[in-house]
Image (cartoon, helix red, strand yellow):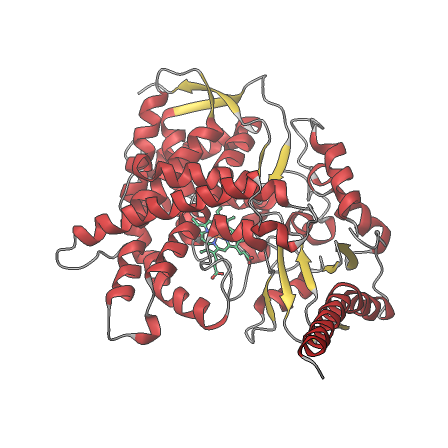
Length: 507
Ligand code: HEM
């Protein structure tokens, strides 16, 4: 056989292998996965061959985007997740749909959800979230798996123990004080933006030893990346497009570079200021793990630290700022609860800057914060992928099936929370979180199981400290300019901000 024939033969085999692989992963595997689920009685919308249900979801979301709701209604599911509402009513709480060629199983039964999230054997991994999300969050704790995740979690967890958080309360209060001092001469403010800056300032100070102004570049770059991620959802493009020098990719690469450089600056500053050690905040613990030669099981590379910084800069402020914003909204529209909380705050803390002991005595406040997390959970859905054939309830789920857990739907379910599920009723948490609903794990705002939020106690302490200080100084009502438009922009937030009217309280 001549050289040319050999080359031609090899190229033909390579080409056929490529076509076969494409056929298997693009057409056959998704088809058989969906078939296996349908054979077990799971139903759902058909969708088109190429895009699945992506177009229908986009249309439904676009139709509800500009919908303005009654200010007293918390039933926003038709606006935020209209497709799930429609399909659950047609096919029940467990149903199958697809985005592109990928089938997705949506489960909303808390028992099934608990099985998925509590699994300790690694049967369920995080969804492959794509290059855009990785650029925003870094390959840090939220996205990593297996040994890397366990090692990182071991390194960062000591930064968020209750003892450590108690020592951070003073810093949280100082940051809140400097924001509130700026509000004193203002009558009407868009509080959402201010709370975002405040929570950014708090995570910068407590975890990285820098202020919001020093970390500003990180937050700005991440905000722009967040918008790029948002625009990429439901957009079905050939995977190769992510690597082409399109305008949006060039912008993303530039932002990633800027993010990395700013984070390196913060890290180098810490390296230069090293005296006895690197400090026991999050950054200090990660640097100790990077520099230590002894402890291999908790080692971290510099690249891994940068990824974790991205994760914590973003996850550490975005969600908590929306929790605070929605609590301000609910307290503005439920003046009786605002008054109740203020009385509690003044009786436990007076007008003093609160410490962690005083914060832990605020029972009504805790109930209001949990009710806000239930009604307006900043994270509306989470996802997993099965990494082997797995039994879930009565179903056999094939390997590689995406599973969607619609937290917002579960949090608003009348079956789970009772007939008043769509109403603001903090009293449901009077006997603790596990007794608030018919199912002990129905509250999923921080998720549950081994991958539950590592910053949960930090977020709760932060939210209560800030609310406490606002209630000590101001009474507030909602501005007539407010438009009630909850929107899922990776996190649930008021689409047009939250303008409120502030009235300083007498000293
Ligand atoms: C109200 C505030 C917060 C909410 C509602 C929230 C919610 C969540 C949820 C639902 C998850 C699980 C995601 C999944 O399973 O796919 C999660 C994970 C995580 N959160 Fe939070 N979070 C909040 C605040 C924070 C804060 C303040 C930090 C950091 C200081 C933080 C850092 C993280 C990290 C690193 C993970 C990944 C944990 C792991 O996989 O081991 N979060 N969060």
